Amino acid sequence: MESASVPSNEHASTTGSNANSSFVRAKCDPTWDHVTKELKDEKSSYRCIHCGKICKGKGINRMKRHLARIKGDVDACIGVPYDVRTTPRAQPSIKSVLASKEKKWRVDMAVARWMYDACIPINAVNSSYYQPMLNAVASYGPGYRGPNYHALRVPLLREAKREVQLIVDSHRSYWDDTSCTIMADG
Image 1 (cartoon, rainbow, N blue to C red):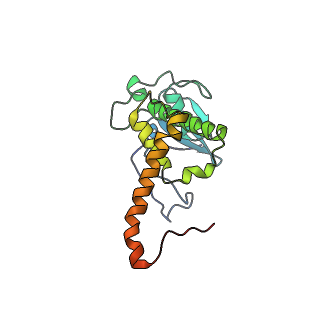
Image 2: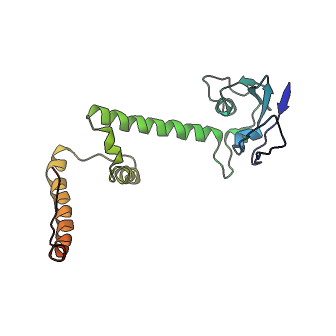
Image 3: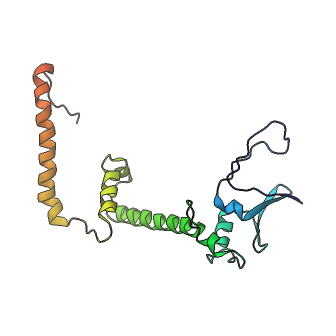
């Protein structure tokens, strides 16, 4: 069995001198400090250095769950030190990285469900106002309640119309120079 330990923050480079490896990615994930990669018959498996648990295939993500002691598709590590689970260093802990990915997925699903339920075309995400809208909601924080039906129909629509009118008025000065007005096709 050929075994290769892959420490973090060491970047492997591609060299023509090694016939067995044509490309090796850099391993900079903090999980690599606690896992060794083993190759047998060109198949990868990962061994936890704290308890000896071996995970075949599925990549480093299963070992992250193992080290963070997240129950599910892999057993929790019984030998992992507490500081590995809650790393107070510059890099976030393995558990917090997985939690933030899950949190983002839940937010994405909430946006998607709302768009599907309201029959909003998926192309709406290409609007130049889409990300600024999400940023404004996020900056407000928890407890934001969106505008109701009346607010969207009356005061907010009136304000949006006023903004567009100001833009048109600013372009009117160019119409005399170019002998052209706003044109639309359709």
